[in-house]
Image (tube, one colour):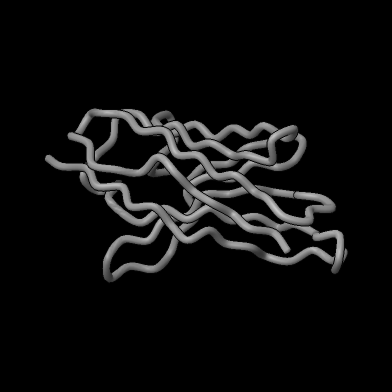
Length: 121
């Protein structure tokens, strides 16, 4: 019912910046929180940043001061501005939301397909 499509990943040198976008589409009734997770090879998926529908944000300690999450509720889109990137930020970044569709109006978890971010040293 709800599809998430990420964009904006790529290869960047250490110290550089990237901006990820994630657009939700489909038969959407409501969207609660929207988050970015990442998973590096051999590691567990971890929460990077989250934002509620009211705009309250939270960040992993490892990205505080470098990453900024924002959302456009009118476009059902969440962004992740990543500055001062480090090689350890290299991972597949996944968009996640808790949303309700119009056909099945209960809150469910939805994930995007992931976008690769590679930071070279």
